[in-house]
Image (cartoon, rainbow, N blue to C red; front, side, top):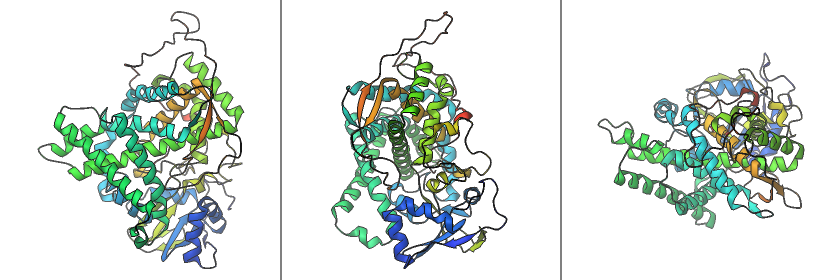
Length: 496
C-alpha cells in the first residue's frame, strides 16, 4: 500500500492496473469469490486502479482524497454502473438510486422525516423495539442475532415510514423478503450477463417472488392509508400529501419507489451494523466490559436510554463507529461519469464506471493503524478528521445519506438497551468470516444469551447523586433534538 497520510495527497497521482492472467474473467471471479481480499490488494497498484468486469473497464478509487473529490461532484460522477442498474430494478428511481438531476427535489421532500428533532422523538420507539426483544429472550437461550436485529430495525423503520400499518405478520414477511433480495442482489452486480438471471433456477425464482411480494406489501399499506384517510406524521403521509395535492409533486409509482428504497436501506444496514457490533464485542471482552460499565452508569437502572442520554453514551457510540469501520454495511459503490473528466491523473471518457469501497478505505493502515483490530478507543477523539476523512460509510457530498443521524441514534439506543440486560456469547468453535453480498455483515449469527445482573434503580430526585427517573414505556417524551457527540466520530451506513 502507499504509506501516505490520508490528508496529504501526492502531487502526482499514481494509476495502475490490477494483475490477472485474463482480466475480463479473473477480476470478476476474484470480486465474486474473495471480494474483500481483492479490494484490499488494489491500493498496492495505485491511487486509481483499472479492473475488468467482463467486457467493462472500470476504475477503483483507492485514495480518500480522490473519493471525496468524486463524491462532491455528483453531477459528473452520477449514480450508475452495474450496482445501480440492478438496484433500480428493485427500487425504481427513489432517493437512493435516482439520477443527480432529480435528487435535490426528492431529498427536500424526504429530509424533514430525518431531522434531529424528529429523530429525538423516535428514540422512544427505538428503545421500545429493543426492549421487547430483550423480554423475549431467556437466560442460556441461543438466538439468531442477525434475525433479531432485523426484527428491531424493521420495526423502527416501519414506524418512520408507515406509523403502525405493518402488523406482525406483514412485518415478518417484509423481513423474509428483504433477506432474500439482499442475497440475490450481489450476484446480479458482479455477473454482467442478464440472460443468466432469466434462467428458471430456484434462486432466481425466489428473488423474483421476494421483490414482487415486497412491492405488493407496500402497495397494500398505501391503499389502506388512502382508504382510512387522516393525516399521519410519517413518510407515507408526506408522500401522499405530495402525490394527492392539487398540484402533485410525485407520482404513485414514486411513492412506492421511495418506500421500498427506505425500507430496504434503513432496515438492512442498521441490522448488519448491530449484528457486527455484538459479534465484535463477544470477541473483545475488555471493550464489552467498558461499554457495559458506561451503560450501567448512564442508565442508572433504567431499562433503555432516552435522547438526552445519547451524548453521554460516548463509548457505546464508539463501538458503533468501530463496527462500521471494520464491517461497513455499504462496502462497494459505483458511479458513472456523465462527461469526459480529468480524474486521478487519467482522462476518463463519459460513461466510465468508477468504483469506491468504504471497506478498502477503512482498512488502510496509513489511515487506521492496526486496521484489523477492533479498537473503539480510536474514536474517543473523533478518529481521522479533516475534509478528506477515510471514514465514509455514509458517503459524502450532496448524496450523503439523509438518514445518518437516525441510523446512528438507532444503533446506539439498541446497543445500549440490549447491553443493559444481556451479554451475548459466541457458540463454541470458530467464528465464520464475513461474506459480502450487496451489503456486508453477519447474516446468520447465532449467539448464546447470558442475563446480566440487575443494576441499582435510579436515584430519587433531590438526592446528591442526581435526578434520573424511569421513562414510561408508552409515552416517552425526549427533548427536542438529538446531539450526536463528536468524540465518537462521524460515521454511518447508507449511500443515498
